[in-house]
Each structure stands twice: as C-alpha cells, then as structure tokens.
Length: 509
Image 1: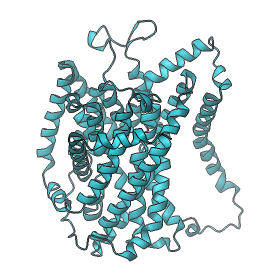
Image 2: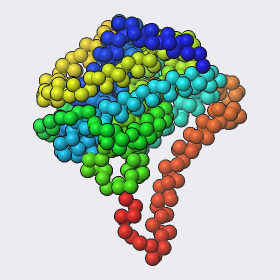
Image 3: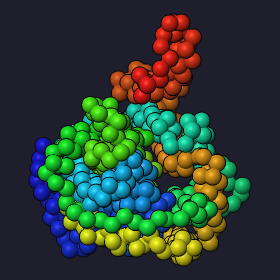
Image 4: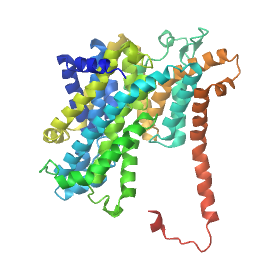
C-alpha cells in the first residue's frame, strides 16, 4: 500500500479551514445527539444547502463530524436523564443510568468517552487499510455486479430496519417507485410526471431528505416530547479509575471489532452494532444479572461499537458508492451535490478528498475526547429549552435552505409533502430509512439492470455466470429466505418438544 496519499491527507485536514469545520461538525453532532429525536440524518439533511458554498472536502469533513459526534452526544442524556438522544444510545440507558443513580455518572461518561475514542480510532485505522483493498476489488464491478449489490443492500436495510420487516419492505418499494419519476434515461419517455415540467428531471434528493428526516422528525417529536424531563444527575469524578478501565477493556476491544464489521454491512450501522455488542457482553459475562444494574461493560461495549460502526460505514459509501444506512444516504446526496461520484475510482481520482475525510476522523475523535466531559453542563442546559421554541426555528431554516438549492418554490412544496409523509410513517411505525436508501439506490439498480440485460441479450441467467454477481445474488437469496425459515422452525419447535421437557424459561434467559 502506498502511504504517500495517506500522509497528504493529513496535510489537507490540518488546513485551518478544514480544522475549523471539523470542530464545527463534532460540536453540532454532540448537540444533535443530546437533543432527543432530531438525529444526524435529519441535521445533515437540513444543512445540505449550507454545503453548496463550501469546498467538497471541507463540507464532507463537517458532515462526517456531525455523524460520529452524534454517537457520543446521545450518551450524555442516556446516562444523566435516562433519555437516549440517539437510537444507537438506547442500550446505554440500561447500565449508564443505573451507574448515575449510584453516584457514578462521571464513571459512566468517562468510560463511554474512552470507549468511543478507542472504537473510533481502531475503526479508522482499519478503514485506512481496508478501503483501498475494497476499492481495488470493486474495479472489477460491472453492471451485473452493481445490480446484485444494490439489490442486496436494499434487502439488508429492510431486513434489519427498526420498524417491522414488512413495513420496511413497503417503504423500500415506495422509494424505488419514487426513483422512477422523470424521464427514462434509455428512451427519454416521461414517467409519473403528470405533465409537470418540474418533475421531468425526476425528484431531487434534497427535498426528500429534508422533508422525511427534517420536517417529518420535527412534527413527530413535537407530538411525542410531552413527557417531563427529570432533573439531571450531578456529574463528579469524571475520569474512570484503573479498575473501571481494566474491567471494561475486554468490552472495548470486542466492541471495536464487532462495530467495525457491522458498520460495513448495508443496513448495519451504529444502532445494530450497539445492540449486538451489549448482547455479546451479557452472554459472555459470568454474572449476567449485573447487566441493567450498573455494569461498566454495559456502557463500554455499546458506546465503543456504535462509534466504530459510524466510522466503518464510510467504507461502502466511498469505495462502492453504496450507502450503508440512512445517514450515509444523505451524505451520499451531499457528495453528488458537490459533483463528487463515490465509487471505486474515488481513491485514485480524488485522493485529497478521500484521505482528507478519512484522516479528519482522527482529529475529530481527539476533539470529542477533549470536549465531551467539559461540555456536559452546557448540553444539559440546552435540554431545558422548550421544543416549541426550537421547532419553528428549525422549520424556517429547513424551508429557506431547500429554496436556496434551486430557487424554486416547487421544492418547498415537496418538502412539505414529504414532511407530512415522514410524520405519518413515524406515527404508524414505518422507518423512513429504507425509503431514502431505496430511492438513492433505485437509479443505480435500474440503470445497471437494464445495461446487464443488454449485455446478456435479455437472458437473466447471465447474472449467475459471473462469479461476483452470482455470489451476491446467492447472499441475496440467503438473506431473503432466512427469516421465513427461522419462523417455520420456531413454529415447529413447541410441537417437537418431548412431553417430559422442562418448561422453566429461566434456562432460556
């Protein structure tokens, strides 16, 4: 591996402007993590218009900082208020708040900060080594391989979505349908435009993202945030003791590896990584009953894993052009707006951008470690600001921002329509993530599929004759068939149990 571009990337990051935007990104990310419900995807979507006047590498450095900064910000309210600011911090509530009730809130926050830093740093080092290899491998990808990869990505996202599996599939299908709006790129025929010239070039990603994640989240959270926020626990003895660090070291190591692997997978991401890491530590523990009552490992494992996953999810985005989760889909849109096409050629054609973004994560993680504890008091005060004050300001920024993209009132109408759709989806248990990811991958899927069929003269079995596309399609079938097979086995389980089998469920816990 040639390390010269990697070193040049540090030169890009250390430019004053890029350092400033890295700092701005992680501070905004921590703030977003503290505010329950908003989330990094919504914030990045709202800030997309701001990136227009910024250099591409600077813009992506800031957006990346928002993403991994939000992972730690959610920890603060999880520990102090038993109120997860981020979905990936839900698991931290169990033991983090239990430690806070024991007067060890500082220990919980300190362990989370150390674990987040180590998990993020390990993942960045692995990303530095793995990403060029993946990009080199992806150079062998043609239309059949991208077709299979897009199908697999959409299915994986639908399979592990936070909503029900059927609802996630429905949302993904709606996203694919929306991706077909506009002129057919092969024939020039107009589809689903209803003779509206504003739809002739298709739906723009920015209004959809800002509507679903921005306006939709705001409307939903205004309805949901009616419960009172209890007074935060006082924080003391922030830095964890040697005994705490020794006790959590194994959880941090395993969380780093597990988070990195799950972050790469489409549909994986920080939330799934934190859940898996917590479950792994509880299963490995000699005293699993400690978990939920203030186990240090119960804070260290999920916090390490979610930061590692947040970093590694950049690998499929930058090297394959496939966003692994909803936030990566929004960053994918930001790259396209900046005229940058993520994919295998990015490492060689845009080395300054690629390595500048990757290396900025080293700086960002150090900034997070330095700032995370001193800013706790400030973030807790921000929680006391009423949502009725914050929401109108955010909505105004969203509508003004989307108008500035194309100076088109039609885009404001789209934001309102998709904001209402996003609110209804959240209210009825539909995750907007699969819709956005399917919309992003829809054009790639359609173009690649039609080009592949031209290559194979209409013979769909040609996908199976190519090693990479055949393997990816086999994985697609495996993922698609696994849930119904497991459900069938679960239904057969009780009937196949011998009559003398014990019924004590404690063995299963």
